[in-house]
Length: 413
Image (cartoon, rainbow, N blue to C red; front, side, top):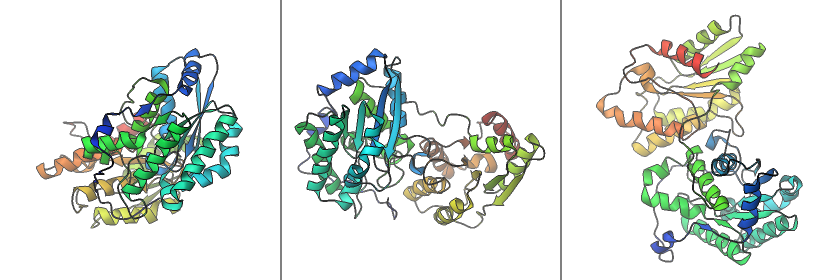
């Protein structure tokens, strides 16, 4: 939704005393009893719809495979293994509650859901008066209930202040969400307050859970899913921070096995290594390589380059191998560019090709003392983007090509 320079700005509100943080972030209501009874019985499938904007939908911010709705299913089943759940993701980029009412019939009610989670607000802040937001939320709840669905209202997630979405205004719209939940006796998942509490407690962990000023990345979505699961079940759970599930190269392997052409875009030295390694595994395969030059470019320039280079090529496989010589102007720019070079390498919506991030230790060896912190940051960032990381194990003396070949054989059977 938003581009531009990222600036962390923390604002204290006189009307938002710290004692509010001690309140429950998961408001209990009688409506939750029905939801929990259905989940506990395991006798029928529970249909859930995640209704929202680009934070809800499947976009590059989370890696294009899962968002908090999909992760919510996993979180609930950790708590209630007997539950039979199906999730319909009804998130659309750029949508406000006004857009939501225009599509609620086909995108939500047509699925005859038992439960609808509703998370709007960030586009309403930029586009709609606050009273229109309130009126639309009430109507969304009314229409869902009229069709027999229970509703959980979610405040928008905490953000970094920007001209279109000043923090004071996002907070005010969150207050409206809370008020509508109270007035209509709707369960509330206060994701704004949950994420804001993390920002106050551990600013860097919160920053690394955000893709940009307003969108959480995959790591942030894990937290949203955990919060929603607690609201729904009344119990806490933790989704492990364990990196993406295999197969890491699903698109590439499927095309190779089918005998289709494969297009690889790779930064050096992998612009030569990857194609050769895949041809060894698939003799006669039609594998085409496109070099992605990095020499002499800063991280900022590589980020700009990625935004224009990758998506028009519609590749099958992208290898992101940013050399340590590509410098950044400070820690924040390092974080932002690492995230956005990878994000701009993904398709915009649901994932359409494979992207692999290569840790510089693979092709440049061990870091100097000054480079150690950045190397550690890369590992933290990539797992929060739901992307595979090709890394060097401690003490592994092998060259980059050998490490790659072993990884390809184990990561993509």
